[in-house]
Amino acid sequence: MENSGYLSNLFMDDLANLFDKPNDNSASLSRDAMEYKPMRNAVAHTARLTEPAKNKLASVYENIKGRLKTLLFNN
Image (cartoon, rainbow, N blue to C red; front, top):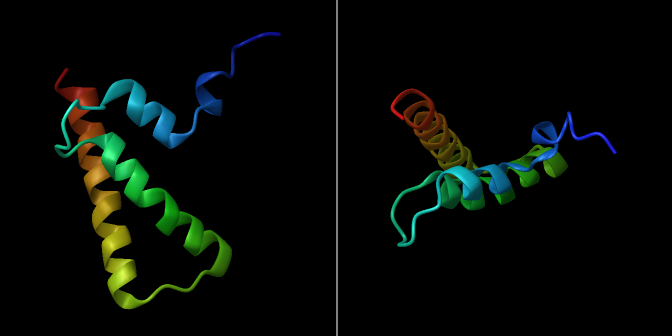
């Protein structure tokens, strides 16, 4: 079986654990991925979130974007 599409099949938490998983509980892409996934799934399945939940989802999303930029451009 050819593995040319292997990277596109990785889940967000798999990528986060591969590239940015600290040994302690400090801020990381891995921690944000675990926090983001259930909120993302709730939106996908119900499309209804409370305003505080929407704000939290947006905040975690921005953390993920920022961490990815740091990983890609500062290493």
